[in-house]
Amino acid sequence: MLFPGILAAVLLLLTSVHAQSSYSAAPSSSAGSGSVAGNAGGPDANGKYQISAEGIRANFIPYGASISNLFINDTHGIERDIVLGFNNATYYSIDRQHPHLGGVPGRYANRIKNSSFEIDGTTYNVLPNENNNNDTLHGGPNGWDWRNWTVVAHTTSSITFSLVDPDGSQGFPGEVISYVTYSLAPYQWNFKMVALATTKKTPIMLSSHTYWNLDGFQNPSTPTALNYSLYLPYSGQRIGTDGILIPNGTILPDQPGSVNDFWSAPKQIGANFSAPEALGNCGTGCTGYDTCFLVNREQDGPYDWREKGPVATLGSPFSGIQVDVYSDQQAFQVYTCSGQNGSLALKNTQGFFNDTSNHPRVVEKYGCVVMEVEDWIDAINQPEWQRSKRNIFGPGDDPYVLEASYNFSVNKTLAAMYHG
Image 1 (tube, rainbow, N blue to C red):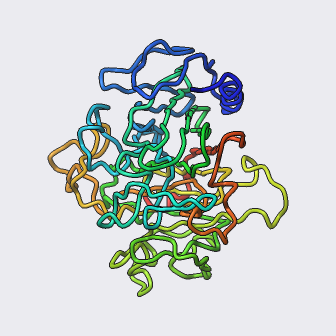
Image 2: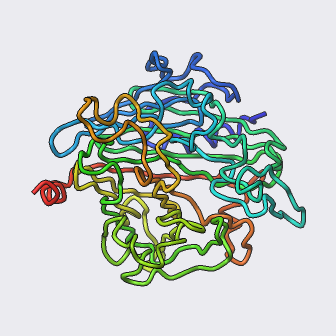
Image 3: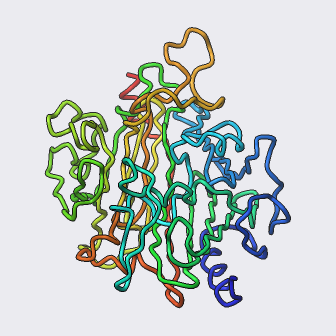
């Protein structure tokens, strides 16, 4: 049960995310539109809820509290859908192979070593779901991005989802209640994620698992994202991992000019793929990135994450679309879609639609980039990192909160260089 005082605290937190909504609906673990506060209309024929603002519009679905479409105009004024997803909301639950498209992984994002952790001397074992059941990824086989959330508020520019995760779910201790608000402002996508542990201490770490292709898969020269420019100005370090991407306790330097150096200057994602150290960089036998970069901003003193500067900038030379990512989190995961193999079809809002196209209507290897704002991964199994106040939450603690803002613009100089 969500007590009135806790509910009031959650609603107060959520109102600061620029959402123009009231939050009167009680949370539920089932899906549906129902009667929601500030109702701007129910889902469309494909089960999607639309919100919009100047220069941007987006669709969301209750399954995983997922973003399914994000439309931005490129340097030529052509509207492109720049995130991966499915055409219809019902397909997300049918295709159990979907790679967490646009959802909220939880209650603990990324990987948990040996599917276990310890809190106050008690060892907890959660359900494994990766690497022959040797670890837990994104909360387990029925993590939060595999579940239907409830729409509790929907306006023309914002939408709020809620989820109640019961005690013992996937092996995690205690009940957790979460609210996620997405809102749009001119050329900007904002979100705020709030989670409260109501009965026991438990790990909580969330993120947005959005797959990006800033060309809408309409670049005639390449189906990949390897020519995108990436800049991580605060990320001179990364978390070391083993061959199955489990943190091994080390913090590694991203030496200037090395494969993992995106902080000393912007560079193309695929610029160093031919370097010997690129092989194995995203796990055994893998070339690319599935890397947790640290975000080091504290050396300059207190800062406002909204003003300090973006933790990441991603830009496409074809479309000219650029996204600057602002976040209050202290890590940033980059995944270059090395696991895509052409089995995932494009949406009908993406790709080419004529028989002369040389590119099939599928997501090919390296055809996208995932950018996850989050805390240090698997910190619950690395106590020496001293991240417990950002990873473990209990009754009476402040809630877990994650905020981020994705600011969109058109980089005409980058596009002009590409198009000549």
